[in-house]
Image 1 (tube, helix red, strand yellow):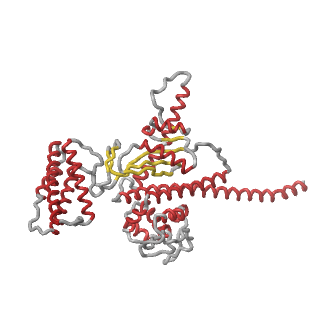
Image 2: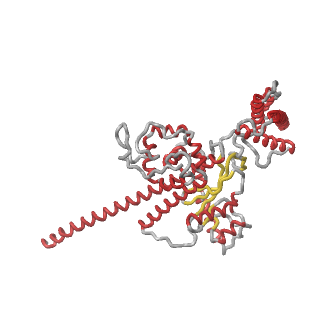
Image 3: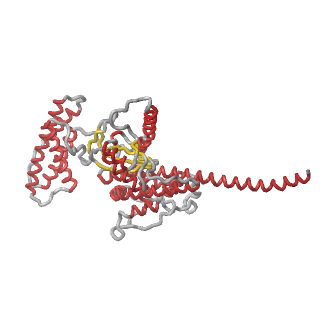
Length: 500
């Protein structure tokens, strides 16, 4: 249920400290809090909650501020709560009225927060940031007395795709089958305790464990040894499935006798067995919707062809970037061709800004004939090589070809910031190590990282505007001083002329 509360920024003098003194107004958290549109964020956050049902929820600023602190400092859920509990500046940032030694909430609440904050909530946050940046830009243009010419297309749209890797163990077929076998053995034990059988079904678990360790400790097992180990684990797993089915028939209950998480594991290992058996019989190493983690069956292998690692395990993102603000336009767990998202990303640009971009800067994979035809229809220039065979250089077109080559080089340089944004997310905010477990929480985790990076861009824009505003104030004071000094010199000069 929504608990309404004003999200206006408290004054530093109103924040009470039990040990005396006052907060430093130049602290980074104090300055950053002033640039964040808390009220707009609260509206978007409360839209996902009921106004009549459920217990009263935590204040929106406390929840969103804690999420920002967590991903800005790369903290765990428990460490985030402890940092807020110990730091008065962080308590001021999340909107508390005075310093409190009690924790703001339990760390487990972060899981519910991530489940609640879906794509619609983060879309409202993105729109609030874009609106605030638009206000700042209009204010700067009015102060600088600059009037931009109205044109049909404006701005540069940078697009690219990346993979946000999940925190899972590197998957191998033998390891996955061994884990599935151990889960099936646990299911047999639990079902046996519920049944009236006097003798537990035989599973050969010790022998299967020795077989697995023999191959896993081998540094460079050959193809025949790997195939033999996979066949053995498949046989052990198939035998365990037969025992489980017999135990379920003996219990003869309408519902699955074990908890839902156990039933879910049973479904997953059955599906994993079918995939591994199909690949084993077909002597292939790929299959559709391949499971690479039993705890996170939604994670998929995505082939990227990078130099460091050719395959990444996680979700794939299509990202568009304008003036440093990076927005996730497409989020998916299956591998997809990012060039198919270009039209949608251009239309999103039109919805956000009211006009089409002047130029699109992207990889060569986006330069398909269909995309080029679409961009040409809307008078959008594509910053990439033209299709077909290169033109033959002649004295007449030498200058034109040189200019086009320089333009392509400049476009390639201007596309670097989106690659840098991915590097900032992965190296600075662990975008390549997502520790959430479910689909919803992983998506919220990734969107929170992009939210923090965009808020930092908004903070820099606010700082630039503040400096320019201070510059205008200083210039106005200087003009007034010079005017007064001139008025004081005029009588003195007239007295000197009379005396002369």
